[in-house]
Length: 128
Image (cartoon, rainbow, N blue to C red; front, top):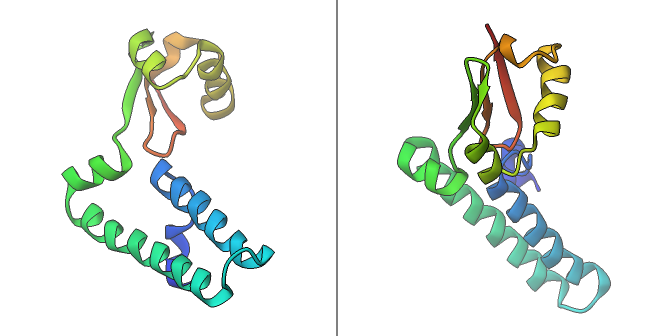
């Protein structure tokens, strides 16, 4: 786990979440005894190192970062929502309403200048 660094295993992006699920599946085999302990542990180390190998080019190359982590999508601009982008990101009007109440402390869409589905899947809201 220490090889992964704090950010590597934070599950902030789908890329991080996939690594976490694969790593958990691999390491569980060592715990329940269905695979050799040290070989499975070595496989887990390789997965964490591969994650770090992908993280470096993603940091230095914006295009590679978009390929690996995705890009944010604007779902509300100047109080008007983009239903197609919301559907593509699986964000319902109820999800948007909830995030408006929790993040922007409003339930009035006309008060929102910009709302994005970030690369992490969170919705960020900027009021007018």
